[in-house]
Image (tube, rainbow, N blue to C red):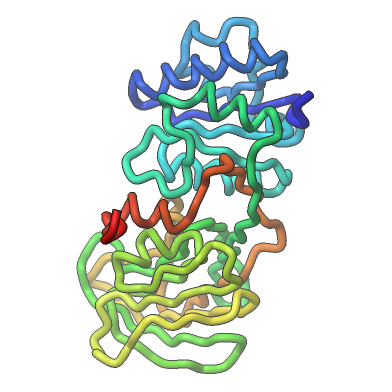
Length: 297
């Protein structure tokens, strides 16, 4: 008997292949006598493909399920992680995106890999998220969380920002650059990697700070402990240019202005990410990033 008696399905069904994968999952889970709950927006996109399966909003799904399966790309799993981390529901990804660092199961192997998971053949690992708040005149004006990264950037127009960086209330530096990427180890293979940051193993308890196109060439990425509290004090903004923004996982956007403080720290709740038994972080990097294979075969 599987330990997962109730499984939630979440899909970003922007193409027929993704819808087909969700429908296959529904049929397979029915053969294993698993109670299935489909997130309501996913059900709407499926149209008549739901049958008599239970439909629920994200809160009900999170509070009822033992496992949530996300069908889509990494962005879909990032969104699901932020929605469900408060409920402690493990997540498993079926890849229908392009890169797929976080979504493990390929569509062709849905029944095989899901069968193994239901038989207890899987691994589980914890990933931490970041809490973000924008403080203006001593009062929080917006909040967010991120599994990958929190990014300060110029907004619609390309221009340099001025800001000060603090770690655990220690002043680190002032900087003129296009912004700053504050990334978890999970996000180190995403935007932070494009910005020149290091690849970090997901089990590391660390945060990387990656300046974006800094004016000072000696400004380099810096890795700090995972328990660090990071503060970015935004400098005065040019009123003739677009207002800068802070984004979480590239999916939520908050406007900031001169004098605002962006406070970033580790979220107390951690995400449980489930993988098939053959999951290997280094193999994933090798295949997704085009690294070389063995010299001697």
